[in-house]
Amino acid sequence: MPGLTLPPFPDNIPTAPLLIIDYSLIRQGHEGEINRMWKAATELGFWYLKNHGTDAEVNRMFDVGAETARLPLEEKMQYEQGDTGASFGYKAAGTIAVDEKGTRDTVEFFNVSQDDALAWPVPIHRTYFPTVNTRMESSILPFVRKSIDINFKLMSVLESKLGLPRGALTARHSLQQRGGSEARCIRSQPRSDPLNETSAAIGAHTDFGSLTILHNRLGGLQVLMPGSEKWLYVKPLPGHAICNVGDTLTVFSAGILRSNLHRVVPPPGDQSCLERWSVVYFTRPAYNVPLKALTEESFLIAEAASKAPAGKYNTGETAGEWVSRRIKYHRLKNRTGPESWRANRGVEEMQS
Ligand SMILES: O=C(O)CCC(=O)C(=O)O
Ligand SMILES: [Fe+2]
Image 1 (cartoon, rainbow, N blue to C red):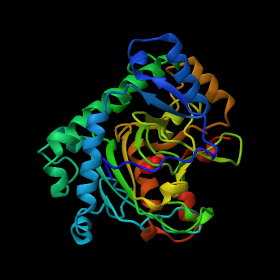
Image 2 (image 1 turned 60 degrees about the vertical axis):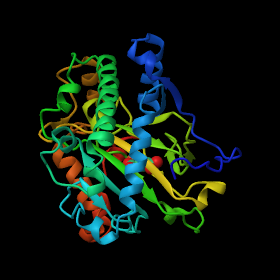
Image 3 (image 1 turned 30 degrees about the horizontal axis):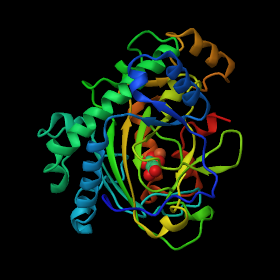
Image 4 (image 1 turned 45 degrees about the vertical axis):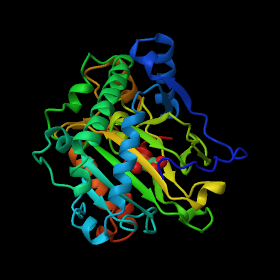
């Protein structure tokens, strides 16, 4: 797909009104832009990011994705993530649920751990496909480093707006501690079935970690508009990343930051006959970080927590346990019934 001229996203369907945030202004500490990002992070939880400076790295990641997807399935399966709740490695299509009924997903993806990339060639969590190994230094590591820089910058901005001491969020994502941060390449095969409840390629979910940066070329991503039943497409804009808040920031901030439900359905209009690719970076807290609202470090968060039902934002889990549980109960091999779907849920039930 990279390099191809793509059929346009249809101009006659409603799309989600994501704010466009200029990363170069955020870096300069531009107050107006920081306030716009705060609005996006607290109201919809999704925004476009322009001037992120990672176009070349993202293009190379699309290439790694395509090279890896072309490997024979038997070879890819040697790097499967397994059923214990581990994230890193390969996920074959049809192995996770997209809904409570246990309908199979239709995407394949692989995840490369931030810890493995940064420590390369020493494996911290696991080993990867030859296509990843040969590209680790030239393509994956530069993408990982730039994505970390962006997410840490965005987190430090949010940290300050939340009234947290400097480093309160970023230290919980320390690169020195093991954690679940990862780069992901996703492929969705074209499908002929119409859009309906059961045709999600990736079911409605909130992201498990703190911040996600998403790069895609074709439509298909949809967000559930807050306070409504309406799913709207997020139109991909060339050169713009899509950023979103994940569950762990919602918990740390006692719900001030919004981790919004989203899903992936077949691309709209003429795009539906094409393979769809996404390149994603997930920044997640270190495994050992307790997942609860940071009430002792911010008056704003303490106030938000005091208005919520007692204990709502004290999960009783570490960030590692949270992510692992959610992955484990998404997997159809671990499914016993609708209760497995409920066991894989995150903050979506905590928000209105
Ligand atoms: O492919 C996309 O556009 C979104 C993927 C996504 O939501 C995820 O991997 O968590
Ligand atoms: Fe997601």
